[in-house]
Image (cartoon, rainbow over all chains, first blue to last red; front, top):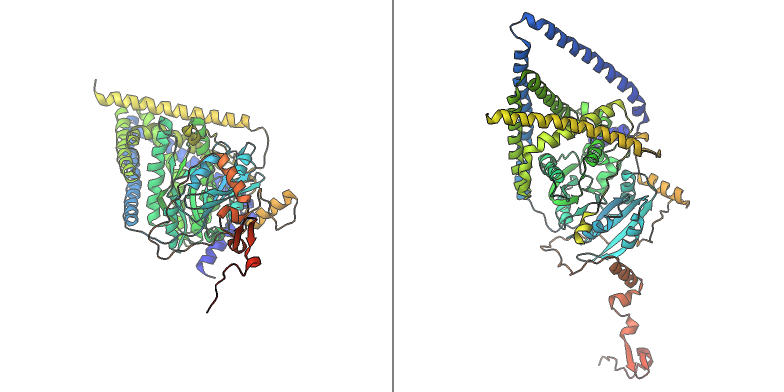
Length: 470
Length: 156
């Protein structure tokens, strides 16, 4: 048995076995037991420090003063280290990308558009696909049991539509509601091409998307290419902050991961896959709420490489209300945690696939450690400021982070040739936006740990491209 | 008053406000979410570790539509012949774009009507019979009827 087969077998076993599910309750009990014992130990230690402090040279104020300085320093070190690694790798990726070109490779591509109640935006999405600067592709709409006029809109589009170079075949699969994963699988199974582009029904692609993304598949080791997601609805504080987050937080990390060909999440709005890689990974699964992250991990674990293409752009509508944003992030966080839990054997055993282990630990840090760390740091600084009056510390802490964010934002905006007006948002980015997101992440984390029930959230779309045309 | 204490106070107040706002918004979101959940629908997380395969998907579609297995129902009959993948080896430039205008559904309706017409009409090409017909006062006359008068090529 080759290494690839062994990895695949392990992966499929992980994904399939009901035994894993049965063991879950026992594992949960064990974790709760461990956490309770460590919690009691920590409490005991705090009590010992509290009662033994009068017998030392410190008083409570000086203890907090020193610990504030130490935590400030440690926090910044961790943050700097993360940013430094990401920036260096992203720079190396960019350097490699600039000098790389492949021509004369135009394989046939199937674009799968899963839709559920996207009647308002479906037509615009398909029109954007017909404008693609590529000749060899088809469009497959998968209507996942929509209850609005999606079916009627889709039916109007079915047929051979005029593309940029030739008529493009537009098909539609109409199926009962079963979730995005099943809808994508239906489209992929119908497609006969070697490459499939999976996207969201509410997204629009830039003209050169296929042309620039497909060229990477000339390398037979590449199993998938992750695209670049950009926020369509800007010019509002809330959506501009999200635009900055997409550029600084997500795309920079993706570029850095791309240098090692280990992109950890192929975004739902745009991902191009080799069909063989999807087959090896066992298709999309519905057992997590982040089916894109789950499939990406399975593709990586199957031994395929994943690249990031910054010019393959998908424009998507970002949530305009705080409630919508929380709904989205709640789903993302719980979905990612579910995906990590599903692949926990790969997380703890680097001998199966070292690259995936590293990627899983990075995801674990982003989804689990970082939000808790950020919240605790904030609460700690508030506490020492209110009780001991060290309010200047919170200013220096914020100033350090803001400077770091500004520098990174400037670099990312310059690299992506984005709007420079996004850079000043970095001043309030961490203070308002990241803190809110981290609160949501922490709450989602607690709910996931306690096993709260959750459902798919559907964001209300207003059809911005349509509105703009009018 | 110095600048740093003022800024520190602003940041402190902002951080506390953001905390309160974020927790409040989260609680509100959960309350709304609970109210909105009226009908219990099958949740994906209830189907633990399900591995979806195309066969299963096909079976599901066919069973629900009540048709024999191995046959998927699509809303429009599909042309099953996919264009062959093009692997151009030495091609420096992409084909030149066709000037097209995107109009709403009327264009697509017209296009579909056009597609329903016979292939020869749509493309403007003629069959071999049509190619070799002669126009007379009675209209088109097939060539084979007037073979002698047609002046067919003869090898000498």
